[in-house]
Amino acid sequence: MKYIATISGGKDSVTMCDLLLKNGYQIDELIFTDTFQEFGLMYEYLEKLKIYFKDRYGRDIIVLKPLATFEEWCFGVIKKESAKAFGSIRGIPNPAMNDTQCYHRRETKIKPLERYLKNKYGDDEIISYVGYTLSEGRSIKDHDNFKYVYPLKDYFKMTEEDCKAYLINQEMENPLYRYFSRTGCAICPFQSERSMFQIWKHFPETWKRMKVIEEILYKYEDMGFNVLNKFWFTGQRTCEDMEKFFEKTDKQGSIFDFSDMPFRDCFCKI
Image (cartoon, rainbow, N blue to C red; front, side):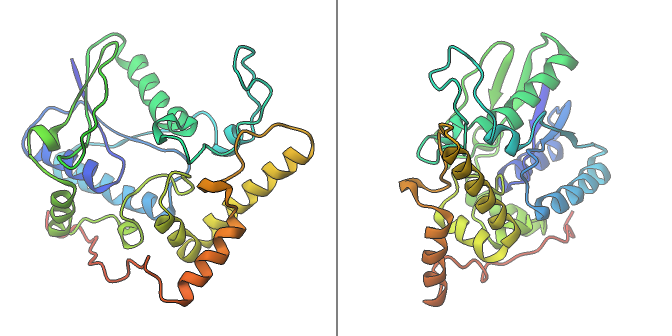
């Protein structure tokens, strides 16, 4: 039986991993799955986490990589002949769908982790710690040799606000919380409009990349390809549409601003 903790860099998973190790729970692997779509600030924070967990607990964070980039999947043609959309270009994961159906999440987070654990541990039973809190009613169905447990809910009785307060007290917040209430892929189409506004305003290179991807998908459609989804936003709104909305919102005094939130990431209280 192997105990695996995945750490995303978000407040819940970081709090979970720290509390598990601090309280002596077994962790055989501490794993970060790199989507190749993380903000630069996330990679900087990950390096601090690596130093912290190594110095404090003598534990390394294993970093797993996907086999393909977002663009390779986004511009890729569906080749499975039995698929309903055979011959179509995948396009952007549809923001109108549930994010658990995101092909990029499947290919960069779920599959690399399962592949790594299967290659290393074979058919050993895997106990996977998941950072769901009391604030969340969801769970993951056990399958094959994987069993999922929820320490923040069942052991530590913590909400998302408790996790936020814990990291503030430890002075080990992720700098992305200056801009976002949640963390994830930089170009995730399942983000809120508030998050997208923050990208437009504070991360112009990421916004530019989103626009380029959108433009390329339109070109594929002009060439006669069927593109399953060309839009980052529900309601088939383009980046250009959203820019006009964001510019107007910003001039009026944005309701999306996070600038007044407290922030410390010095890892001093350890």
